[in-house]
Amino acid sequence: MGIWLWKMRILVVEDDRKTTRLLAKGLGEADFLVDVAHSAEEGDSMLGETDYAVIVLDWLLPGKSGMTLCHDLRARGLTTPILMLTALNDLNHRVSALNGGADDYLGKPFAFSELLARLHALLRRSGIARPDPLTVGDLSLDLLRHEASRAGTPIELTPKEYAILEILMRHPGEVLTRICLGEQLWPGDDDVTNLLDVHVSHLRKKVDRPPLEALIHTVWGCGYRLGPARRKIRV
Image 1 (spheres, rainbow, N blue to C red):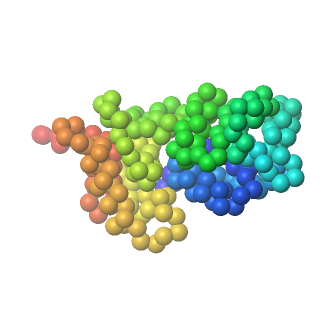
Image 2: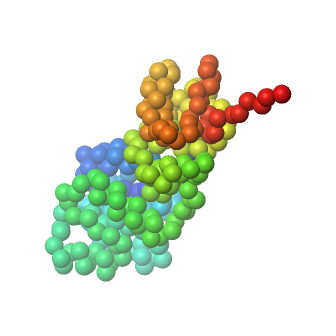
Image 3: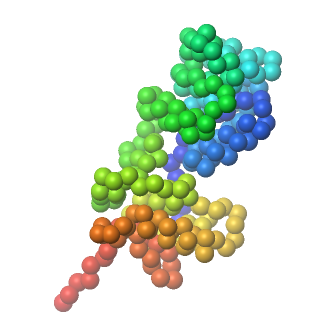
């Protein structure tokens, strides 16, 4: 069975290799697909081949600057949201970035949580590929904000718990095998059954907290199913 996870693709244009590794890791864990370019020229080439939901662009790039690339992209009519990163964090540079076509500006050093919040804000404002929330009964999953709630109460999830819940909610009522789930969540790992069971156990404690009806069900010897309990019919 093939399972599809909804993800947005981001382009990070940054020449510092350590920064790009950290951004790619953090954004990947936040369920974005991440491409990386280390120069304005490389980034420009990639933008000609792929449609991105948002661009994270460093101002101080070798050769052609990020600010010049931003201006050129806007002159060509590209409307993809751009978040500008730079150590030049005074008022004049912030104004120049916004006037030059950037949609938002974040000074270095920055907290990753703020970067992520700004990216989500840009995506909400742009309305790019905004999916409808997934709902099963009183359980809801906002795919853009990466927020889960049950009966109106927010649920704090780890990235892996979120990914498991999204898969289950895309196939309500279906039994998903441990093998199928493992291949999607830990591609390339041979035996993740115990690891999966631990994550599902933690997820169940958050989603099916008493006195709410249990929605995550174990199908013994097979896998898991999300949905109301199946009622036995008396005859």
